[in-house]
Amino acid sequence: MSDNCLFCKISRGDIPSRKVYEDDELYAFHDIHPIAPVHFLVVPKRHITSLQDVSQEDAGVLGRMTVLLPQLALEQGCRPGPDGGFRVMVNNGADGGQEVPHLHYHVIGGPRPWERD
Ligand code: 5GP
Ligand code: ZN
Image 1 (tube, rainbow, N blue to C red):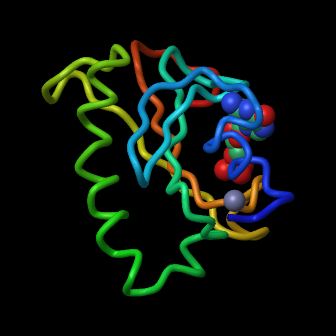
Image 2 (cartoon, protein in one colour):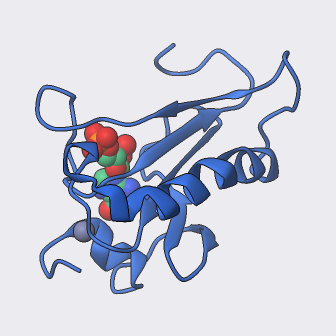
């Protein structure tokens, strides 16, 4: 946990968000500036800055997160099957375009066109 981290504060409920999912290790919430009809973020509650900082001990929670993404995407309105689908995006570090330094997976989907295709 990092005291000054926005997504640590959101995942422990100190800053309000529109929750999509929560368990002991993971928190998912709607992006404040959605770029598509479905746009939410999934974070590990434990502070990890980016994929540049993961270690073997994070493999379990990140694996669970990957398996959870399609379930949450469907619940949020992404269409199933090859004609549907969704995008998963992870920005890492400055060159990766990361703005919030707490690892987060963007899940983006819904009927096109999107704001940024
Ligand atoms: P990044 O560029 O770091 O991959 O993406 C950060 C994302 O966090 C952006 O899409 C931005 O809209 C979202 N975001 C930034 N601040 C907040 C906030 O306070 N609440 C929520 N729900 N989303 C935020
Ligand atoms: Zn954090």
